[in-house]
Length: 564
Image (cartoon, rainbow, N blue to C red; front, side, top):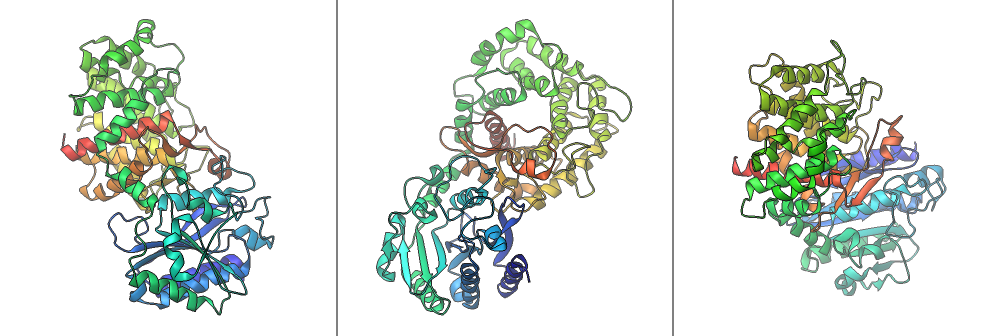
């Protein structure tokens, strides 16, 4: 039996042993395109559970004996019954280096890397050609923020080691500090991993025969003594998540929407977000005068010729600025942009949209043509939009969209663009439009699929149908916005509220106090294969695309909460 099948069978047995407590997941992808398996407790991301969250990690070395030890530990935990599982939420990575195990090249991974080497990894998320495993593991651990990380490895004699954050556990185990190392546990136990806080870490070295006794010591100590509280990382996530939506929106409005160069939707969306936020919170400083100054030169020159849809959608703020200032010139920008979308025949995309029907254009056209119809009442805009959305034929039976006709890949943000485009269209299309029911059905099928694929953390993956694909920020914001808009305006059933709340939880946790975000996919054209989508850089820090979408999401969530 292959090592992959052996691990799969072991996880299957564990799921049967404790039904309802665990789910199977993958937290990363190796260079050989192998998903890295994990076992996720039902409360791993819960904000309310009183259970102690422990993350067990085995097989960083890629050594079979270490993997077997981790699987044995899980069997022992499952055999402990409710006495353990009702108090402890145990998630696990049985083999953090599956390529090293499969290729028998431990401690390497067969691509020139060593997942058990130096942490934290720097840069190249998640496309490092040698060590992607490190990057997936590091981010997954940090934003799961367990109360304890337990690493297991095989050895002839028992040895407990602890990181700086786990000093309170040392006396009960007779452990010694991890010193002179730059490994995973040491990095998690000091400083502010990923801008959050520390996580206690223990490493147990033992033989298979010694394992039951030593785990029993640990679990008994954790059950009987209040020695382990929330990790500092978990507290940091609680703080971020506990901020009011308007507070997070103000952070984003301070960081984004203050430039209109280049002329593209990534600048226009946050400008619009600043105006929308002020509508909700009018006691703050009015951004309209600042925005008017920002775009005055652009207004005087008018829309340049030969703009792509992504540039035409840059004026999504224009009608809102007209309302805020009373200056009708801004409405003219929307109409001018909409007039650039010219039909090219039945079943074809209007110019200047990509004739291959890229999902990006669903948002770009929906945002502008819908607004033009609202402003003018001219049905030609609604008809161009509806015909374009229905002519693409890139939505599949299960509800997801290909990136375009020639790229049959379920890119996360590509489906986010589809979600937002359909939501924008349904916002503006009249109720009696002949094609509204078909567009509403497209939207409903997509929302159902995205709900089904949402990760327990609340996020959407970079490639929706590829297990282990990294958890991506912008697609989550876009899904959340589209769902919140549908709930608020009544074209989505109320039972989607749990999904959108979970998405907001993830976005709030991944937005810091100055507007930096976590893992927004870099600008992405149509790619040639899944590997290229998986390798698109994940931005950790300032990103105007992510910030703008998060701002729209935050404001839409606040509108939903207020019922306005």
